[in-house]
Image (cartoon, rainbow, N blue to C red; front, side):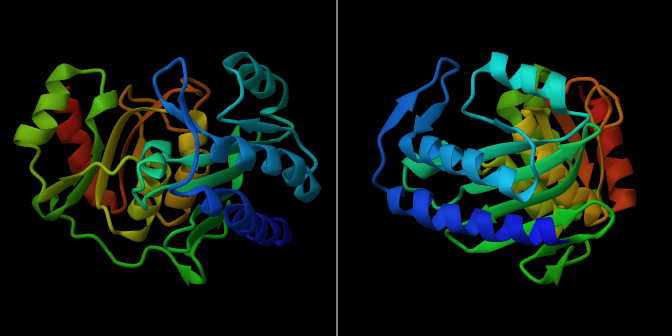
Length: 265
């Protein structure tokens, strides 16, 4: 567990040194895909790239690298081991002064996350997990609350923008048999809210590797169940860089939610 403890400290340190001093005061540019890039993203990624190999000697795959470099790193090191980093998930929130963003770091080996940390530096909530050892919010084991097994009582996280099916996108908002739907612009914290029991169910049409690497580990270590919209096992080798997800923290609820999603795609 020493590597996980070292990772927690490093994530908090870089958030304090490189990210929070730039909150509400950072230059922002638009990337080719239309998403935002801030100078805080670059500063944090550079700091992590230097320091993460001191914890585990492995290369670092960061969101703000070129797609070519990302795919080469994954191809050459996914089995032997590499770090997967999102220096700031929720950059649009960050750039607009919305206090809902996070740092996400995972170490992946044999294509599966082994340790992961997601940190919200505004709330100072640090979510973490080690494969086979459970998931935690700070020092408290997750989940924080048990979900109902009734879908109509559920709070759903849903990122409809990335759902490929227009039919499903419209039905999520118009017909989904849940109590309420949330979309807050930070996929990594979505995973943590699922793992905590703050959300009960979740659907996303296409998360990037750095969006789910730490979060899916934290969620499954908290006891959650998940699959892809395509029907694959979530950690299968397919769709590595763009992976959809259907998830629920409670097993019976997962089956009900998955059935409703499949019937409405």
